[in-house]
Image 1 (spheres, helix red, strand yellow):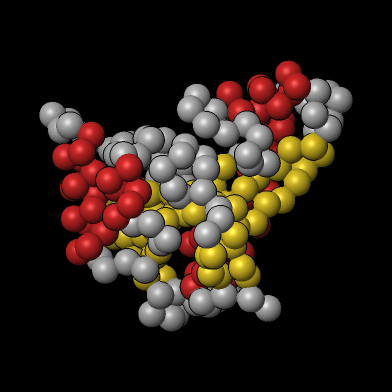
Image 2 (cartoon, rainbow, N blue to C red):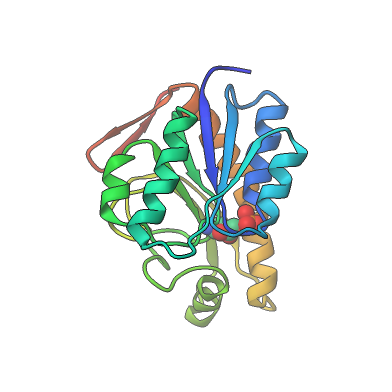
Length: 207
Ligand code: GRF
């Protein structure tokens, strides 16, 4: 395992986290996850971390202002000296201060083909419902660097999936998620290998 140090932030089940764990364990990511941070004490993501010998950290929001909570998260990130922050189902919108502080080393995975179906309110099932309502024949997932715009920021890679005539939001979500589990570890692997650079709004992936 390489020296590249990854923190994953997750609020929920953590299946995207699991795809990165698998990528580290099978050697396709030359790095390691040093901490999994969650704002949800019951997140299954924390259990997954523990099961794989990764430090789980629950950072409570109780009694804290948004900025104070982000300070606490930043303290953990600094404690673990991380090279990359992966938002994998971290459902809170981050403040500009947090984003600026970690700019260029924080990525997010979104279950649609950004810039379509992104922005405030576009999370979880809402995304897939909106895709179905639009009649689009294609959806997919995107991994992007995080900037001050919700679901904005330079896109690193995307994958498409077909939208089928009899899809429900649930079946579409499952198909997109399967693709997320391929795309996310691939992108993390490229970043860990030093192959991804950003030039303004453009992302360059070296061969
Ligand atoms: C995924 O759909 C991802 O695109 C979005 O949050 C969901 C996380 O799912 N950002 P899981 O908790 O990793 O299973």
